[in-house]
Image (cartoon, one colour):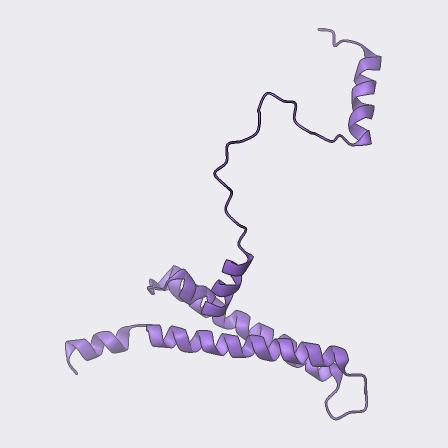
Length: 141
């Protein structure tokens, strides 16, 4: 065995391994979603596969997906495996996060800062203020 072979075999996770684990996570997520949806639509308690069974399958798929994420995050955080955020979170989750990201703020100047802010007070705030006024000014002892 040459030095290059030893280095390849001694790597804990390669990018191919990470990609395979992320594909497995995507399959598990799809299985979890499908089983959960079917369990909600399934009303026959005497069927060979009941809603309870589908719910348990959904839970098992979720646990397996979480375990794979835990393996990847532990390898990255504790074992020095070089991994990008995209590799850690999975390509599908990264795309979802990008879709949910808020729009950047415009570059227009802010409104007049000297105007009083439009603040809404709760009824409790006015009670606290009226109680303080009723007691009078604070006195030093």
